[in-house]
Image (cartoon, rainbow, N blue to C red; front, side):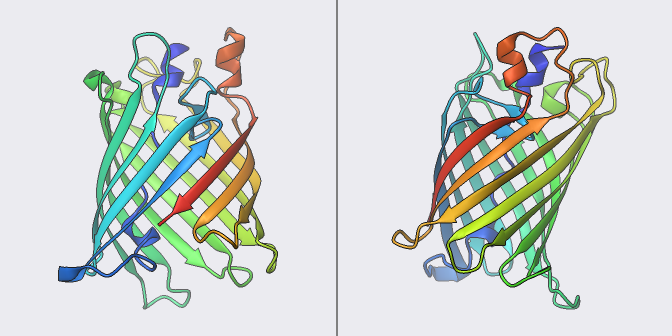
Length: 254
């Protein structure tokens, strides 16, 4: 079961709502946007997907003004000998602003397929629902809440629920900001899949961000990312992949 900890992968592909505002105009009500990133460690819900090595990532979203969108997100991954080196995740969904609510949150629902180019037996799909609230406590801040479900977690034929919340806030007009996130993941059958013997775990992130004023859409983030997974019996390398560690990421959106 220890090795299976590192078979859980992929960020949910970014929704069309994330890029639609600044995307260039296209015919038929379509818009296109995306992002590229370099990170010192690809962490998915607190778990390393690269054996704590760096990753190069990119995502693209094609959106329609109806709220429908299609996304594709990719990254290198490394789970050890004989495992895939490329993750490529398509997603499809619908995003809309709930104007009848006072804070006008953005609702985003869809499905993502975690796909590995050279190991299709690890592929699995997940449903997600998100609510994003802007200007919650102060101007410019944001609160994102996620609910995710699959009946085939990490292709292990067991269902799983994941809930998480993430908050970001700017520090005035300095370009700096703060981020924090907390998540919980549980599986229904720990005989088929477990987190070092447990059927659930929590993950977290806390850090600072900086938006480069001279480069539109460019930002940096330094964060502490980790989990509460018990590391008894793990090797040093496995422990580093679940314990709290520093992750630095450069991102450019377009």
